[in-house]
Length: 404
Image (cartoon, rainbow, N blue to C red; front, top):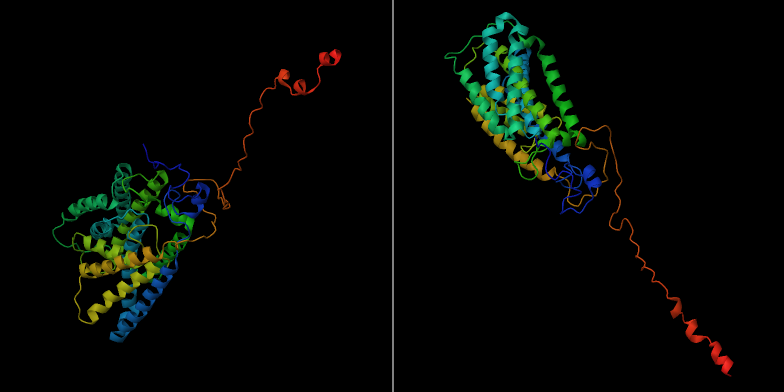
């Protein structure tokens, strides 16, 4: 099956005029790309803006109700942040690999309903099967996307429709049967979420890993296959994002005593993708921040706690729509100021070769304009006729001497 991109072995893009050995280490994609390193300063600046907004909103919440940030209320707030954070990680993972998974919201609601019904059997017996089914569903979605090479957003939307059919089999809200209280370990849960998000962002900032993760991102015709490595990365991201969404559903159900309503969950999809974009993840894939996910999740969670204190009634659809709109502006900001600087002449650094290889290479940039040197080709020697030797014409003839 032709997964490898056509023209992959070309020495250089016709318009670049750069040798393939240099392209391999300077471009994020050897066949199509911009010379130079991505600029991550824009990510850090935006994360500072998110931090300032979180500090201001946290102070406003503290001024309205100090009890909202204490004791049980604080633990509930932290668990809510972890639930939303797992959804944002799921959306961000699929976005970074340019394979957006729109089924994360319905999967979370379906898992929450399953846990609410089966929670009395214990946490492993109720969560284990749900996670296994989510992994199989993510694998089926991944096979459809990578084998047929169709847009992930369209395939996952079809999968979301199937999950919504499962949800609509419940006609009434389901009361949670289990006794698991995530608030008792709220601090550990939030610390674990923050560690995973930050470590993922740090690894994603390494150019070799960023290039590998964003391999599925289209660079020319979106319908062209991007290679076997891109297929594996995109498939793993779709499976992982579906599993993360299932775990988020368990926390969302267990954190509140209210019954779980059988909604479509698409509002959670909008909110999750909006938070991922707000965190600095590009909607086109590959580019993303380091601390952005933790800061964006915390900002939205604090706002959802602050709005009732002011008497505002805001739905998940409203918050998700606003966050998604702002996130699209952030994507434009990241893509405009995060790409390599025009005319960049940065030296190449060790990177992977875009395939599953055994080592790291760092070829030196050298001029190849006049290499190898060309020498004039000598003319072929002409055969010499001994009878036309000039000495036969110039020297005195013997019979002339005798006559004298």
